[in-house]
Image (tube, rainbow, N blue to C red; front, side, top):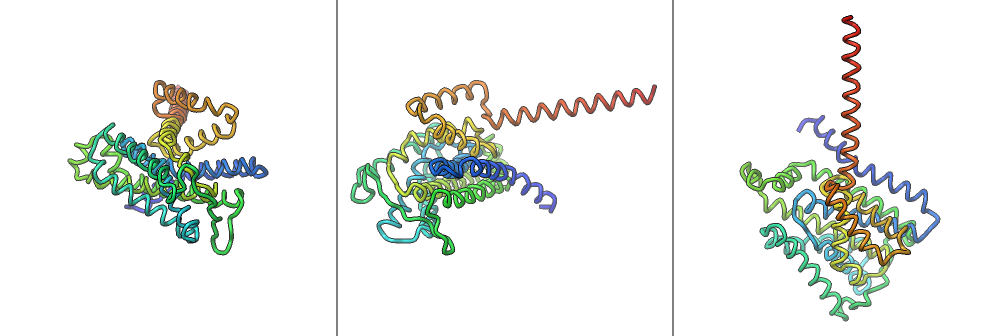
Length: 340
């Protein structure tokens, strides 16, 4: 790969992290004096990470995955059980949470990724239901419906991130890093192969793309990012409960990703921002949130299938076309004037 092409790819990969960074700066500016708002902003960063993983396998890979909450739950419970029950430091448990969720994704994906369409979606849905039942019914192991608390604070290089404001910095930095790395992956050969298989398995297979292995790798990365998001959520809330990792959570993540723009760099950020807005500004109408989210999804499915990112991209494309047409007309007018 030439140097200029590599620089171009890295520049393209930095677009979404720059957008995340802008959102983080704005959130810090307007919520720095409100611990509850900072907690929600931390949740936004956590959801950016989880949605980045979901976008990889569902948006770019074309495989409808409904086990996002289960992977987040695995990461959260690994963090809680490791730190509270066994006394480990939170930092190494973040790595364990990532590895555990990735391993489960490989175990689940090995047989299920050979399925197609709704069959794969149903298989991942079953994984989420099984996980919820396990952590709900095994009271001695997981705390049952009451959950587990209190998860200790994260400590890095002798600095303890005990408050929401302090931990927000860690979550924001990880969200930016994850978004950058995922976009680098998408711009790599593996990302190209993933998109090629989504468009046409026959054509991709014809040019030598290892479709199954590529999707399994994407599914493992998706699970790992879900585990990371769950571990960070456990550290932020200092509490883990099965009610946070139900089938409804997985569906909500899918819906907001679709509304934000599935298969786009900006989709995870927009989707996480939608969840942030619903959590903060629509709290008085909490009972109506599923209805609002469902109606919004149906409207976008009918009129804007590319999501918010698609609408914005189309708008910018129209502006660029108008600009080019205007410049072309001006050039023609100047040429005619010179000839005259």
